[in-house]
Length: 204
Length: 342
Image (cartoon, rainbow over all chains, first blue to last red):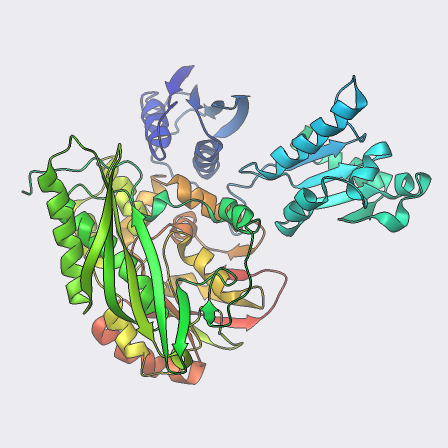
């Protein structure tokens, strides 16, 4: 495996370094692992791999470190151009689903837990990449209802295309059905489907 | 003086904050009482602010600055000024005064700053304006731009969201300068490509604007950091959709080959992310997709005009901007905002 360190490099340097590493394989099969420090670089590398037909996977090591691993088949050169696809889906954002299953975050003092959850939702709303969907169930259902401290943050995310969905059975159980203040209502089948199709599930 | 070189990191409009991040911050700002004379402000996604003084006089105000995207300081000054002046033209205005905005390292050769400002000043003069002052601060890296004030008749403002269903869309400059500058930074751009890109980035939109003024144009914006598709979507304003014929979109062919080499910017990918789910590509090559997302420094004007008038306007535009072309049309709102076909 060839390791490429592109930490601290701005686009397109990570791609340029990775292409050089692929060239050094001289047509042999191999694996190239590139380290970068931001998600946009991951997306640009993934785009290249998809266009060239290399198998690619990426993982987040920490806030400032991501690894992109490409598996290059025999006979591939960095100059190959994959046939143009008719409708491309390159550079697709990951489907991230945030799951809020209770009205506080973590175990311990419940007041603290509520403050933490408020902070968590605010922090989610400030990320470069917003999640695709946020699901609320059980006592988490109260977070999308009147009186919740997170309504503004959730509305702002909803306005930017994030799906906010609350479990209908839960709203009903807690007598909150009329109090829903942001997003839509969902059911168990939908929750299961969204969680199964997620690339990443984030649970505070 | 041509020996002096600037350090280019991620310059020009590729240095712009992503539209996604910006939307979130702007939507939370406190707003004071609405001033009825502020005809165009934050609320619209327009190129500049327009404030009405009398029934037939308003001033147009804009500001733009960024880090270098070319090594030659004089050229950088010209590009930064051309880019800053462009917003006045995109509103249908006339340039009057400009103020320099400068960030410059204390230890760097002052001759470099002189060259940057000479380039900027020449463009302000070419635009028919006067350089009236400015503000400079010490900073770790070079940044330059202008705050420009112009005038416009309030009845003749070219807002960017006045387009109508059936309008033809015209683009006046080729796409791809962002990708070419990026390739240049890693020494993979040809001199010819870079020369063409520089010529395009230092061409004032004034000449196109002078032609447009004679026509009843429905909408006009300049294509800059958010890329062609980003600025087109602002123009559609959620009210319409558009079909773009990518084969007709003016572009630098070299930029297509650099895109195929993945010499892409982070800003271009941010533009792609921001458009996710809103833009449908049908049979469009990957490189052309990238050009449509490519952040343009000092890009051309994107114009919406009644279809019947489009050919006549284009013929006149072609005399001052030979690359200008009809690139698509506005259609009624669909479940996608933009469809790009071959």
